[in-house]
Amino acid sequence: MKKIVLLRHGESAWNKENRFTGWTDVDLTEKGVAEAEKAGETLKEYGFNFDKAYTSYLKRAVKTLNCVLDKMNLDWIPVEKNWRLNEKHYGDLQGLNKAETAGKYGEEQVLIWRRSYDIAPNPLSEKDLRNPHFDYRYHEVPDAELPRTESLKDTIERIMPYWESDIFPSLKTAHTLLVVAHGNSLRGIIKHLKNISDEDIVKLNLPTAVPYVFEFDENLNVSNDYFLGNPEEIKKLMEAVANQGKKK
Ligand SMILES: O=C(O)[C@@H](CO)OP(=O)(O)O
Image (cartoon, rainbow, N blue to C red; front, side, top):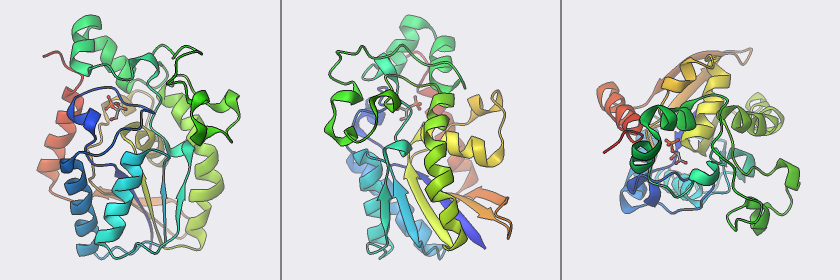
């Protein structure tokens, strides 16, 4: 049976500080590295063996992938990085503390910015040095395609060309693929795979470094999906992610 495992990176420095991160290239914390290693061990225990892995251009995802492959003795497999798997761009919220932002603008508004389907935060200004336009790693991406902010809808629209042209077609020859990315870029992929409505996607919160397995039938339709781990613990982790947008 063909499988794709989706994995959000381990805890990052700005997850720990509860700050909007988006395209900011922050590193993993020690806890984040430990979470990534645990994900690798879990995948190994369950007998997973990946043919190929995909990740974003952001180091919290790249390093999580490296930790997982190291624990699985799969350092040798082909890995493809693509900017299209980056996190949702959080516009001018990037760097702000989520609880403080909820205190200032209200929890409802923060929920809209974090989880709504088609509403994006205010964009970064053209001159803002955090604008991806100034970052060499994106120099081959046409400027018109580089975001200054994104809704989930925008994020899905930039991921899908890569999903449809590279990741999904490689399932025809590969058995099992690993995609290590981010809370919202993965919500976008999950929305697509499970056909989740624009309303229901608001409720999905992904915990860091918990493998999420998708199984496909012979026609490459999704036949089953499940997280690896204790369901009660995973539920608590999901609630904790949701609560990051609450006032202190
Ligand atoms: O800050 C971010 O980039 C994302 C993911 O870490 O956070 P949120 O859960 O608020 O979408």
